[in-house]
Length: 158
Image (cartoon, rainbow, N blue to C red; front, side, top):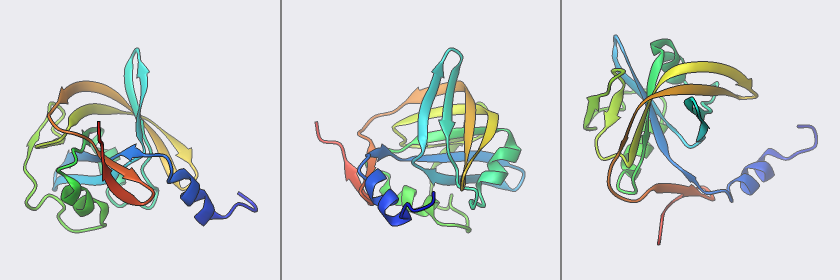
């Protein structure tokens, strides 16, 4: 965007609190995943979600090739897991308890909610991609959401 300062753009949009998710999949080499805060419901009929992985992600192409993924919505007790999955490279699943879901994608134990999907369409979104997922399984857990606001983690207070 010509004339628009990227730092200012990030600062202003940082005033929108978001939940945090870990998007996971299973491939022949093992489980793969990344932290993602750009996630939302898209459609009730049919049930669909949307997420926006960065084009620079090394995990996203592996998840896309798998053809199915799981969105693990994190609880406020899972900040450490979020930080581990936010870095590039390495085995992010070391010490993380998970079970395979109906698609084979990892369901991270203790998540606030689970949304399993088959891959829909992928659209260009600047330095990100806009990805749709067709929901095939859902589950809820216990706890409160892990939130991200103004470049910091936070917790929901009722």
